[in-house]
Image (tube, rainbow over all chains, first blue to last red; front, side, top):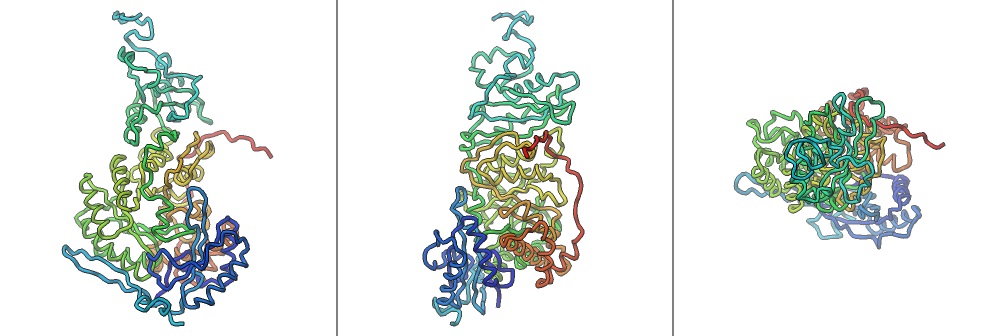
Length: 141
Length: 484
C-alpha cells in the first residue's frame, strides 16, 4: 500500500470538509475559479483527469462548491477527486492550486518496470496496479 | 583645426588627449530614449579626479572612446554610438563615491547576446586607472532588446505544469557530501530524499566527472533513484544533473544522455560562462528540459559594495540568457543576502514589470514583456523550523533547498525530506486558511509535528540555528518621508 502524494496537501492527514472549504475560499478570494476533477488512473503523468462538469467560472460561493464536491463524491465514492483553482491572469493562465479532496481507501501503488538495454542503460515504465482492471472497476465500490 | 598634425590642442578633433566630458560623453541634458540601455554605476574616483569626468570616462571607455582623440570617429555618426553619462549623484552616506547614470544606444549591442553586452559594459572599464573602484549596480534593458532573447527555456508556469505541482514552493536538496561519493552511494541519497517527499535533488556546483564518480555512472544511478521514487509516490521527481564540463562538446554529450534517460532537468554552473549558458538554454528549449543555474563564483565580484557587479544585474542577464532556475540567496540562511536586495532579485526573476525602487536597489523601471519567468532557488543553511519565514519572504514560486536540513536529519534522509514537506504543506495550508504565519508559525509547526515524528525531531535538532550576520551588500538610499 502507498499514499499518492500528488497535489498540494497530500503529506497532511486527509482534509476535513471544513479544511477543504477554507482552501476553496482562499482560491475564490484570489479570483481563481474552481474545477473538480476525478480519476481512477493515478499515473503521475496522467494530466487530464475527468472534469466534473465545467470549471465553475461564476461560482463565488464556497458552500456551493462543496455541494458540487459532494455530488461528485456520491457518484464516484472510490475515485481520486481533486480540487483545482485556476488563475487566468496574464503571465500565469494556469492552475494555481490543486489538491486531493478524496482518495480510495486502498491505494495499491505502482510497479516500476525496467527494460535493460546495452551499455547498462535501463528504460523505465511506471505502471499503476489499479489500471490492470477496466476503468470504473479499479478501486472496489 | 582640421589637418593639424602639430600635436598642439586646438579643437575637438586635434590629435592628443582631451577630457572625456568635452568629447560628448557627459550630457547632463540628455533625455534617455525608450530604446536605450541604461546603466547605473557606483564610481569611486581616485583622489582629485572630478566625479563628472570619471563618469564621462566610464561612458567613453565602455563605448567608443580610447585615451586619445582618433580622427576615425569622424567616419561614423559617432553621436549615436557614444554612451552618454547624463546624471551623477553622490552616494548617500559616502564622501568618495557617486552613482553615475549612463545611456547606451541599442545599436551598440548584438541582438540576443549577453556576452556582447558584458564585453561592452564590463569589458575594459573596470580596470581604468583614474577610478579606485567601479560597480555596476543596475541595468535597464529596453523592451526592444529584451525581445531579441529567447528567455527561460521552460519558465515557472510550464515547469509547474510539467511537474504537476501547484500552489506551493518546490522542495529540493543538494546531495552531501558534495565530493567523494561513488555513483551507487550517491543514488542512494537521491532515492531516500525523493521518496521522503522532495521534488528535486541536486548535484553540487563542483561535481562534474571526477575519479571517484564518473558522470555517466552518476547519470545511471540517479535515474534509477528518480524513477524508483516516482513509483513509490506517484509524483513526478527530478534531479539536477550537472552537465558542466571543460568544453561544449562534453556538455552536449552529458545533456543528451540526461534526455535519453528521461531526466526532466539538467544544471549548469555560472562559471561555464554566458555563451555556454545560452547554448544550453537553447538546447533545453529544443529538448523540453528545465535548466537549473548554480551561481558558482558570483560572490567573487558581486559581494563587495564598491567594486564589481550587483547580483541583480546577473539575475537580469540570466533571465535573458534563458535559465529556468537561479539561486538568489535565502535571506535567513548561511549565505549573504540582505532582504531588500534579495527582493530585487526575486522581482526580476518573477515579474513582468519591475518598477524603480531605491530601497531595493532598483534604479530603473524594467519591462520584461512576456518573457518567461525564472524560478528563484533559496539554498544554504535553512531548515524546517524557518518555514513560516521562508514562505513569507519567497511566496509560492521558489525552490526551497534544504541540503543539510534534509540529509543531516537524525532519523535519516527520508525522514528529513518528510519533515520538510510536512512543514511546508502545513504552512501553506495555514496561510491559505487565513492564519498569520509570521506570528503563529512556530505554533503551526508544533501542531504539524504532533502527527509527524520526523518533523518533531527536525524542530528539536535545529530549533535555535540562525545566521544573524550583517550583510555586506545593502542598498544605499535616502528614505523618503512617508505621507501619513
